[in-house]
Amino acid sequence: MSIHAPSEAKAIPSPFMALVTYTLRSCIPVKRRIGILITACGAVLFGALSWALEFNQHESFARVAGQGIFGLILPIATLIIGDAVLGAEIRSGTFLFTWMSSVSLGRIVLARWLGGSIVAIATLVPACVLASVVAGASETAGPIAIGAAAGCLAYVAVFIAIGCVARRAAVWALAFVFLFERLLGFALSGIAQLSPSWESRSVFLGLIDDPPGFMVRKGIPEGWSAVGRLSLITLVALGIARWRMAHLRLDSAAD
Amino acid sequence: MSPDAIPDLLPPPVGPAIGNDPAFVANPNVEVRDASVWFGQKVALSEVSCSFGAGVTGLLGPNGAGKTTLMRAMTGLIDLKQGSITVEGRHPRQDRSVHDHMALVPEDEAVPSGLTAREFVRYRAALHRVTDRHAPDATLAAVGMLDVGDRVVDGFSKGMRQRTKVAAALVSNPRVLVLDEPLNGADPVQRLHLINLFRQMGTEGRTVIVSSHVLHEVERLADRVIVLVSGRLAAAGSHRAIRDTMDDRPRHVLVRADDDGRRLGGALLSLPSVAGVSVQPNGLVVSTTRARDLAVSLPQLARQLSIRLQEVRPLDDSLESLFRELVR
Image (tube, rainbow over all chains, first blue to last red; front, side):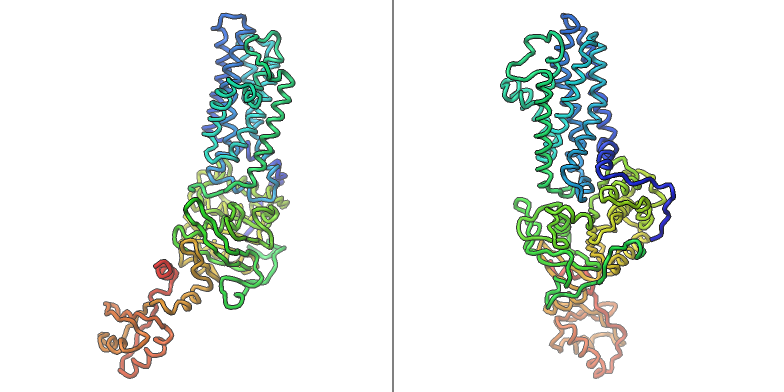
């Protein structure tokens, strides 16, 4: 082997650091980044839209945030990210470059989740805070930031789990958002309690002053209790992802 | 690759076949026992049993024969429906420590997006806890990719992607290397370079398993051949040994002599080892089921007829012809 090793070669990082860096560098290609930015802009637009409602700015933004930001923007943006950090890689056939190592599957799942969550939080939390400022309800910036951050962490974990369970992960993730959360979650509070969308909305509503009464759902914890529920959802989703990753069938991309 | 680059490798080189079964070797690193895989109604592997030891082994077969499935099962990427595969005595699907000493170069063109070749190899080095910071550049140099190490892998040609994946596989210094069509897309110079690299790794004591559809290159590359056809083990051994075991199958030999061929052709038909003779513009094509007998009796016959033989050459002593006969 002819070695031309330059003396300035950088030190090789630890496996976990490499996994997180790889997730940030490789898993989210340009098209997906554009998609995430568009949805983040959508959050700000929802903030502007609140001016069109005939309530005071506090209530108008609470309504817009509850329906638009937590019901639509948050799941779509995190779906783009959550699918990218695992499901898309499994489909493309490149995940084997990560899987074929002695790094534990738990670490791989954790690193992918951490990388995806960093992207989601870095993009969506500022967008949500900006939306509250644009809406003239800057007093809700803290609660919406906490709700969005907790929702991002849970959603990315859920979509990683779906990527480990289902072959067509993006389709199943959409079904989870629109059928399970929106449709069943709207009708049944038992389902809503398992939903990152409803729970993150509940974080927000529980932490602001005077939330619109009709938006508060009985049987769903609010505020910091909802953060606890989202943490539980996150842990369970990561556990499922870890368990399923051991059973993945890593066919070639064409299969 | 220089020997000092792989300090933890052990001889011995190519293990001999166990007993009379050429599908198995002594001191195997990879053992496949009754391996079966099916996807729905499609049987990809059916009760395949063989083993792989130090040295280069070619895994051959036509498209859909089950080569990629076997390689993916060996590396733990897919589970067997029946049977077992062990790598250095461990199950590659259950014991992840196997991957410290094993690497795969997949056939797929897919590569991680947005990374340079150097970053990709460094990523693989990090996952394998390689501490030598120069190892990524050394392996890129070994496959002739150091000069383009800072280019994004997505923009590479197929051959360059394959070589980058080979570098990513070698960076962990694996004892078992599984290469699925590693020469795809490489230009002739690079093919030769890679063939020499793989051969050298085999002689250094690694278990190198290579599949390829470029069969004449595998003949140059592999010490031993495992042939899969329709998911089943069809043959094993050196390609000549495989050919020798197929005595009941017709072989074709070109015979050129200093007459017009009719006299010799007529006399050849009287031999019990000859199944048929056809006169071609470049000589006689003799079909035989017992090549060794023909090799003995042909010179005797030519002497009796006072005919001088100019050329005797097997026409189908290649792996391509072997495939054709095995799948017939």
